[in-house]
Length: 301
Length: 233
Ligand SMILES: Nc1ncnc2c1ncn2[C@@H]1O[C@H](COP(=O)(O)OP(=O)(O)OP(=O)(O)O)[C@@H](O)[C@H]1O
Ligand SMILES: [Mg+2]
Image (cartoon, rainbow over all chains, first blue to last red; front, side, top):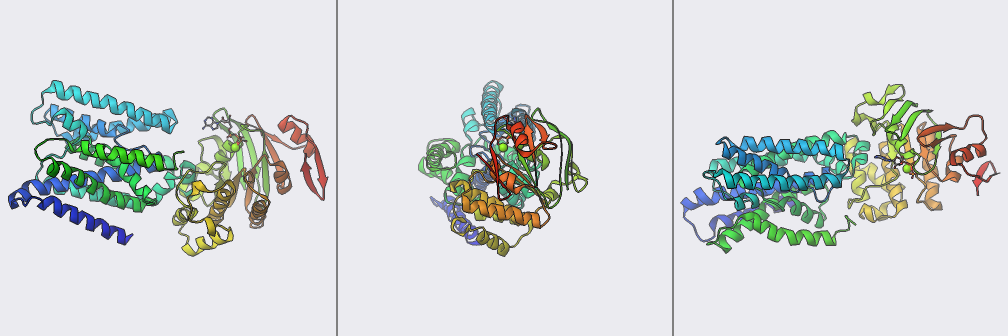
């Protein structure tokens, strides 16, 4: 485990140095553009991936993540509403994100089927995404990214201070979740197993989903709706036989951050003249990996 | 002692009252879909039933969930689909109960799980899965042991392991409740038997075992007694 953590730091170090220094930029650019970009990208990637681990395990559903369940779109809608009224998008994002979570949890009780819950989330996702499109298209909001960017997810240029705050967020999320690892392991084995190892599955599930959703909402209000990182990264971990939650959280923290950084680098350095949202690359790379993992996995048979 | 009073759940369990003493084995039989599994889940407090279930006089609803496990534990009829290994499963169990790694290793070898301890749980055979979960129960060491169709997948050798498990639990003054349609197994290992029919409890009182079985299953049953043991054909 310690070896893996060291490896995580090592890889992150190399990727970050590459990101900061490729093309020999001026120190000004490193400070004002590349550093905040790097910090926000890494933090967003790790928050998304870590949340994916939690959602998949506590719902014991390999397809669950904040994006699929519509929580990301719900949070995104709030951010857009916030912009629309000239209010703090983070607060609105948090509000609508949490409303979405409650809606899901309420339906979970009512539907009594994990598959139906997933489909309900897919419905919410579509609904909220189209509401976002309407609001952005008709609202003519100033200083707001385009519809495409917000829906696919992007990395805006923010202040270094704010970027450092996001890095803290991602670390805080990781350190809040790590002590829950045992419980998440038990929940992943099903509610009955969890109950007979001594935890209240419904209560723990709500707590965990709630915590992660708050962090997701914060991220989404900044980056728009980046998909696929939350689903794909945990599955790559499992594919590498990292199955226990504690190890998987650590893996996803590093792998999620670096994966999004690499996606961002491909865009920034590979296609410097075209402006494409980073979510396009995560989907482009993530989707085939996801399909590959699904096909080779025995778990969903 | 485990006591249930007027326990109902949805329309599946209907006003069941029931008790089982320490150091005894109670068999519960009944047709498929009659509500046996649901009843065990209610007994353990896992389902939100109406009525009252108490362990040694304490209302189970008032016992915190994290303390219930060491009172009641359960061998499920259906197992989780997981890539985690038996070793992981026993470790997760142990971590909650602060059980040492050495104890887990001992359990693994005493249940003959060494060979399969590092294989994905979902790739194990039915009988192997039962053994893993029996080991899990033994690790937790609860006062009341609920077994749901424990003999369903077992060959003769593993059935003997199960029999020894039940005998050991009895000697340790635990309350054992076995749900099973394996009548040969259940009748011979149990101190007494009750039936569940359409969610209602049927007791044996007044009838002999053959009449009782025929009432529960509504079919003719041929029962023979050899060497104090019953055999059904
Ligand atoms: N969660 C549930 N919601 C609604 N109905 C259920 C639920 N679980 C079980 N049932 C129904 O309750 C009835 C009793 O189911 P249960 O699993 O308790 O039967 P059983 O006696 O254990 O059967 P078997 O011998 O096949 O294991 C069945 O008709 C089943 O369809
Ligand atoms: Mg059953």
